[in-house]
Length: 222
Image 1 (cartoon, rainbow, N blue to C red):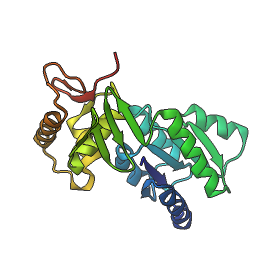
Image 2: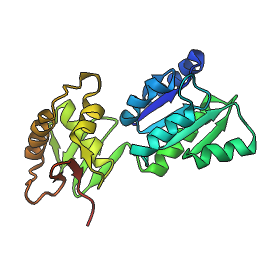
Image 3: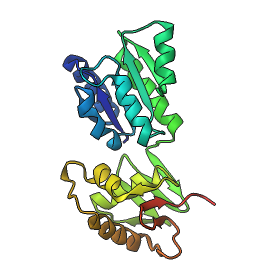
Image 4: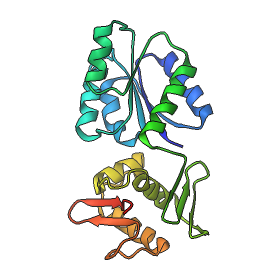
């Protein structure tokens, strides 16, 4: 399932939202301030930011996100309910805006809607290749693929964003996370293994394209 980043300095609120989102089946990352949130943005499929954070504000984090992750769905939480504030938040790049207090069920529903609009789904199918993100299974041409955890995570990351070029560093941060080995070559090794299992030719790729000197992307339709 998609990964949700929650950023709020209220531990009780985070606890409630984590419980609701976990029950929904999401992977949830949390941060209590803006500085903690910045390095976690790359790992998220959707982010929920409190406006009034200690240190960097939610708008500051939003601005940083939009520099490198322009398509990341972002929901802004705030106690500021005035029209000017709502307009300011949306103009800053938020995709949605919720005024406190709110129902956790509403947040879950709004996250679901943002993910729907952004094209993040639990099942992906392209050119005979099918990924079930809930069951973490992969099928190609009706045959099950035996993928390692890292191979599946690499493939699903690329497949969810066709045409988007991922640098090796971004893939390391997104897929390896806390186990980030800090060595670009490890991405190439796992990509080569993944290509072999997909029967993909690097010179004429059906699925995985190499962008020379930059990284990799999943080939778009057509």
